[in-house]
Length: 444
Image 1 (cartoon, one colour):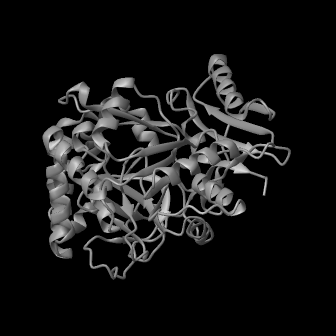
Image 2 (cartoon, helix red, strand yellow):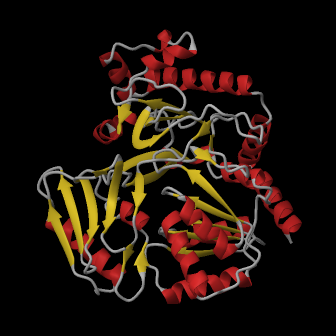
Image 3 (cartoon, one colour):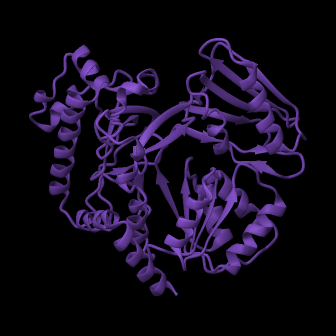
């Protein structure tokens, strides 16, 4: 079945998405490059996108001029420090001026994210970048088929019936199942696990916190889930305790993958589990201090991310609010990509319900997706009595309709069994021991 699925998948993509197949071939070639050759590729791509942004994107022309920077200054790699940092606020305040005026509007994919600080942000991605192809690459790193039977534990997004049908046709005969992490209870987990077993699922992918709750259910009920070869964790830090819990529940390798709504596919574990390989052929990661200066390897600092492929909505040296460090050591796997230490600074708690259900904390990053121009920041705080406070910092006077919509959404997810308060606040206190937290739960 695996060979049939792979052959069918490659054939359909060759016929319908040949650019995706070509990108996959390039990725496989890059995996075999020397470290020096990959660094040169990365440097050329950095220079190219900075030059392009300066010449074509209104925001960057103004931003670089304001900071007395010109792309001609990029002579050697150390000159990269001269490129000005941008922040979430810069993107939010200049959204329309970052959109490439030369691109066809039909190529836009809108991505909204609450981010680590709970401040909603909207960015655009280019459909023609085929970001899903990087998933094929990492599954080969894990010695898996690029088209395995796979199960997802994510927030389900709305999609047209036509898109759902096309997706099923593209993946056939691979079987795919979903558990909506925005609304989970024991009954839904039980059904999901039955589907895992019935479909002979190979890969289980989802939000780290939500996957851990599924694992807890499996262990509590002593369920034997055979056949899973990889548990693929995203969206929040993978602790040693959670990794061991997932291994015990599913008897499978557990992998960490780091990305964001602003920049997909930043870094991923290989099967040596010795750090996260930065996908430096398509992304660049800088580690900077609080004054935006570069720091040495093995020094903890702020991440500044550059998407080397997104010319539709360029994101260059974007300080995203997360913390990590570049390891000095090379990975035993021999891949040429830099190694990122685990991600610090993203803490996602679960919101638990009195009936034993829960809502994945990652879901709450999405509740203000539709209001990036009205909401400056937010934080969800669950008290020990299960009640929920949603604290909102608005850009002005918060529309009552927005408050009503948010209450309706959360009440629906919680089945109206918890007390809910929406509060307007002047500031969001989201820093705890160096960690930005948009969901805080007092329930242990």
